Structure formats: structure tokens, C-alpha cells
Length: 295
Image (spheres, rainbow, N blue to C red):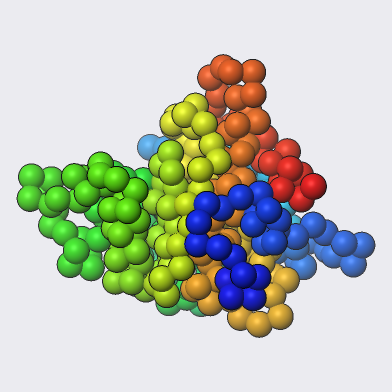
């Protein structure tokens, strides 16, 4: 995909997103538009399940399947009754949002590992980041600066001690240094790295990179990362369903950047009157961001 469209290694824009996104035709049905399976949320953070599912539905997916704790699932269905509970036919997977890696149970860890064992392309967030090296299919990790250590430690790129690891200092540096951190992590990991922030940087193992500057400071609020994971999963599932050949890890770079652009633009739209926004506001604005890219 990256080579086929001549995408630039610079700032990702709506014109770039337009090349990735697809709108349904008269011949489409729910399966041809893509199906995503999500293991998100927990009893401690049930809202993450709701927000990630909402992010996926609002980004043009044909079907969302959700798997997890029954009490959390009831909240998902209250918000989105069209969501299908349990595993089934799927084109992409989203896992980890709203799960705490340090407190998750063995049962949850095994469930995550089973999902990562699938060949389906996967979006790995939050409480599954430390398990990313176990993924069998192409994947993208979506850490913020504080979570990137969880990705790097299993790769031997850091130690679990903030006083020794210089990562925080590097991420506080200039843009070239942050870009270098993302690119070296992607190469070591063998997956796409999307480092969330005011400047969201995306890098692939093959060396392709871009930066997404769409957004607003109002996005710095709880739950917006969950919405982003769902949005990326939706774009990914749609791309897989439409692809004539198998999606590889390099293809995930533009897909992840497009999801980040949609989420950032949705944040701008939600905050257009200059006031505070919530994560659900961002999710609800995603269709408008999609329309803006498609115009």
C-alpha cells in the first residue's frame, strides 16, 4: 500500500486519509465492509470497552464483535445494541484498551494471547502492550509516552526503572529524537508503532514514517485513546475486507495514521466552539471527520 500510492513521509493529512478510507457501494454488505473483534475494558475500566466499541462503529465498520467480562458487555450493549457478543468471523482485532497489565488476571492474559495468536491484523493498546512480541499477524501498538516503556522492555531496549531508563528524557527532546525512538522501536518489535501525543508519530519496521498533527489540546482527556484504538481497528478491518491480497505490516502504517487523523480531526470538530470535550464527544464526531476526509 505505501509504495502504491506514493505517500510522503511527512505530515499526514486529510488527502492522505482519503486514499485509505472507503465508502460503501450498492454492492456492499456488513461483512464486505469489515468486521472487527475487540477485547477491551475491564471491571476497573468498563468505560474503555464502551468507548473503543463506539470508536469502531463511528468509523464506518460493517460489524463489531466484543469479547470480555459479562458485566462490561452489558454496558457495551446499552450504548451499542448492534454489537455482537463473542468471537466469530473477523478481519481485524483490537485488544488491551482499559486493561491494566500489572493487575490483569491469568485468565485475561491467556485470552489476550489467544487473540494475538490469530493471523488477523491487530491493534494492541494499553494493557496488552507488553505481550505485543507474541503477535503472530501484522500489528500496530498504540502507546502514549508513559506506556512506550512497556513495549520496549520486553525487547531489551530499556529496564523497568525510571531512574535508569533514559526514555523519558529522549521523549521530552526534539522531534527528530522522538522519531528516532519510534523508528528504532518499530524495527526491534517488528510491528508498527503509533506514539500518541500532540504530534502523533507513526513508524513501520521498514522505515516508513509520518506524523499526525490533526487534533486539539482538548483531546488530553481520559478515554480518547480508547476511541482511537477502535477507530484504527475499524479502518484496518475495512481495508482487510476490501484488499485483493493479504495486508502486511507495512500497510498498517498508513492505516494507523488515518485512524489518528480521524480521531484528531473529530476532536477539532467536537471542540469547534472552543470548550471542553469528552471522549464520547470525540467518538460522536468521527462520522463528520470521515466525511471531511472523503469530501
